[in-house]
Image (spheres, rainbow, N blue to C red):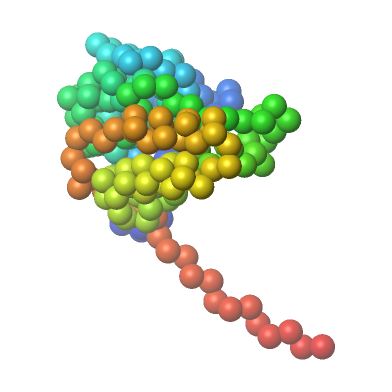
Length: 193
C-alpha cells in the first residue's frame, strides 16, 4: 500500500522471517523508493534476491538501495545502477565486525557490534529525513572511522577501518527519497495532584 500525497511513509516494507522470500520481495519492491537489503553476498549476488544477469528492472528502477552485505558493491551494485537504480551504497569487500559470543542473539547489546552497525543506521536515518545518498554515505563512512579511532579493542578497530575503506557509493550522489514525516507531539498535560 502506498499513500501518495499524504506524506506518511508506510514503506519500505519490512520482510523478515517467513515473509523474506523472493516472491514477496518482488511484490513489494516496486512500491518503495528505498530498498535496504541485508544478507549474504558475493560480488555478483545478494543471496536469494538479485544476481547479475537476472535483475528484474521493475524492482530497482528509480530506487535508492543500501546493501548491508559482503562484496555486493563490487559487481552487483554497478549492475543495479545500470538497471535503473538511482544510487547504491554497498561494500566492495567483506563487511566485518566483532560480536561477543554471549551477545550474538541481541547484537544491539554488544558494544563492538554497535560500533560497526550504528553508523549504518545513522546514515539511513538521515536519508529517511531527506538528506542525499551522498550525505548518508559520508555519515556511514565517517561514523565507522570515528568509532575506529575511539575503539578500545584493536581487532574491532581494524574491522571498522577495513569497512570504512570498502564502503562504496555508486550512481547519483544527489539522489534522495521521500522524507518520512516529522511527528511533533504536544507536551503532556500538567499533572494535578
